[in-house]
Length: 472
Image (cartoon, rainbow, N blue to C red; front, side, top):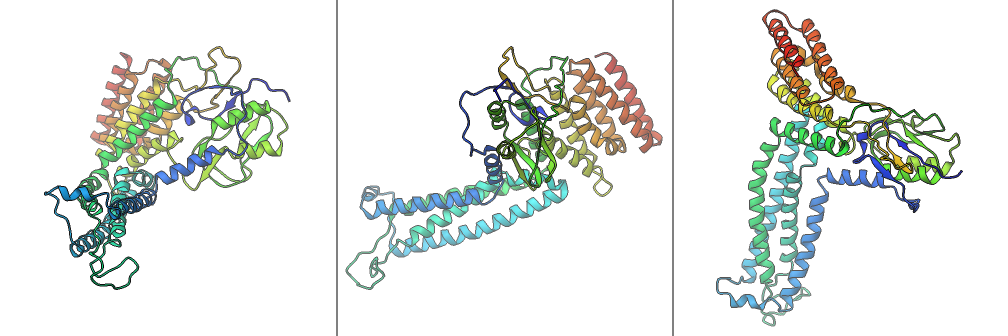
């Protein structure tokens, strides 16, 4: 089949940063699976073992290198500094023993505190927030610093020898003056001071990181950044949806949530085989064997092409925010719903979540959500969304939390204000109409959930909302 202009159609445009693809002249290697590699890197990024293991390795190499410098006499210049009190074998051994023992004890305590904080946050704010705390660089690097200092002190300790010891372990008293790696010992002391500073930072960071305002700020800032990256263009209106592809079906062969989709690889495969590729899933969707992943513009798909397209989807046991914009929206909604539940009854936390939802809605309202543009280049491969417009995101945010928000007077009043604030900065009249409709649905829900003075106040706020909205 001759090559022809082709397009990759994802269900949502926000799965990739950037909307314009230019066809490459060279074919990609057949064995590259960047989607799985990116998923693996994300898993490493959200782990507690990577940085401690890395720091332990680097600390071991540092200890070996510095001990070698001490053993070859290249650090004799330290004797020229009177402020440096050179240590004797016994004192050096004692100091290194204390550093190593205290660091492993502190590391154990830090790990216990971190796990307790993660368990608290997961149980209080929702299990989906576990990833946020696992990714926390402050926690990861704090633990890694203590582990690295422990390994370094232990490695240097084994090189310290008294006067009656020889390197092989034999006993030849008086033949050697002993060995104390002075520079290595000074570095161990410096690492101990750094570890103390890191411990102070950690004791401040943990309670600060589990404060609900900090949690919501991190989620909201990440969501706004993702919106800007995924939808860089301003809203121009008049966006036309692409026609769905109805060719050969590519079905999944494994089970799990789609974490990463390698759109660059899909584009190259489409160009190589001369066929359109239309995705019917997005990052965050759950698939199982037999569920459709994509459809081709042609009616025939070879086994090699099917396998290559499947390799463009990295699956896992849970959703991740790497390409899944709705993941962050769901986190804000979940926190709001939990805060307004009868067991917690914390409307002020829900109000903060509503504020961030309003900011994200305003940002989405002024973005081009079509996700494709040829810019006059007929030979360009373009990512074209099939579904999920501004109405979808409004429903995923305010709509998903509507029932709980309407049942609380304070939350309902603030939601009207947040919707109005978002509408004021949106130029598209049709999108403002969707926000007006959402405010009407909120009032309708409040009519069923509230009564008495609370309901009257909500009605009055909606009336004020309508007047202000008409003036926009």
